[in-house]
Length: 216
Ligand SMILES: Cc1cc2nc3c(=O)[nH]c(=O)nc-3n(C[C@H](O)[C@H](O)[C@H](O)COP(=O)(O)O)c2cc1C
Image 1 (cartoon, helix red, strand yellow):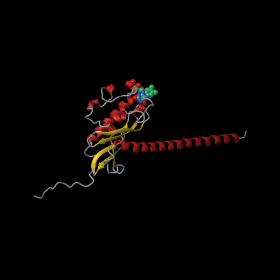
Image 2 (spheres, helix red, strand yellow):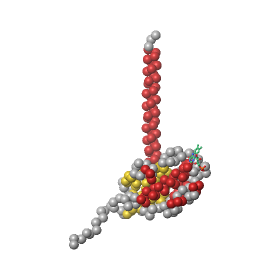
Image 3 (cartoon, rainbow, N blue to C red):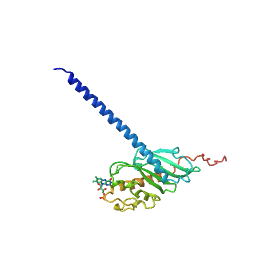
């Protein structure tokens, strides 16, 4: 029996396998590019809504540092954008991750004003369930807007949880896991900023003259 048909079949199968793998890889690359572009667009759209843009006179994209506190900020690396007016601190914008969303990590933007209160919170990426956990999006509900103006003293730290757990924040009907995780992550972000308040705004624009030591 001739081996030609077997070889031909093998060749065709091989070609399909290579083609299939390349198609999957290409689709994956395109999808992750699209997700990254969507996140960039969401960041730009949202950041202006949670910072005092009218007083800001620096470029926060240039005035950015990276910090690492996985316990409080949910990932190995978190960006901190500094918002200033005439060199004076106005606000910080961080991009922490909620590690324990119902359906996986939730990416946040959190603005903390220089007085320690929240300028606002926005969700820039999540996989929570439509109709349940997705009420964290401003497109679906006003829930996340309720963070603006809150601080570690308002409500007091023990009330930084959802009402079901005795706290001050609403949960969603039939979906407590998502809001509970977001409230905890925002509280942890405030704690991170409070603990590092001395260093997060970095060096002032002009070096501070050291106090005169005197010679005598
Ligand atoms: C298919 C499915 C999807 C769900 N999605 C979410 C979700 O995105 N966020 C959430 O908090 N709970 C979600 N839940 C509900 C949780 O399993 C859990 O029951 C709920 O968060 C607890 O809220 P409760 O204390 O108000 O019952 C989902 C449940 C099912 C069956």
